[in-house]
Length: 120
Length: 108
Image (tube, rainbow over all chains, first blue to last red; front, side):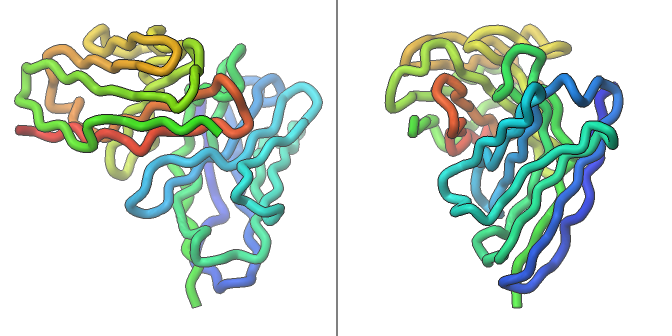
């Protein structure tokens, strides 16, 4: 059974940094592209970033303005999202998601989400 | 960026009835469209990909159709567990992949 165990969220002040983690099990992590998707309170789903399986290429949503970094450690079966200079508008639930074997951007498995709240 | 517009925003349906949800793309996405179900406090669940292919374990009550710019998710004979928010997502041209704003299916 695929499991994506997320950690690292919480309440932070504007300007601080945060690293979200997602530890995978139940599949060969190194073979799958992984993404982060977020949901701002009261809003819909929003794709944030993707890292490929093959060469660890990274792709980001335009609105991130360079403050987010997605990375992976295949030796630890873990996906990360580093968020710097946090702003109130980054407040959201962040989901770790797994692509399918042939479609990187189709999200067949989701973590339960980790809430990030940015407030002074 | 491809914008997806879902309609209606809210759909009130009685249990046992059929629900028809629409997703329109601002430009062609071929058949590269998926549908997800999202219930409060839970992770979203993939229902349909490639416009009409059901994901593993998804009930035959759910069916998808369409290509190009117009897509439909049909839920036949709504069950209590089907009341949720449904999102479409395009992955034809990425980055970025984009989602629609969602359709809430509620009990009438």
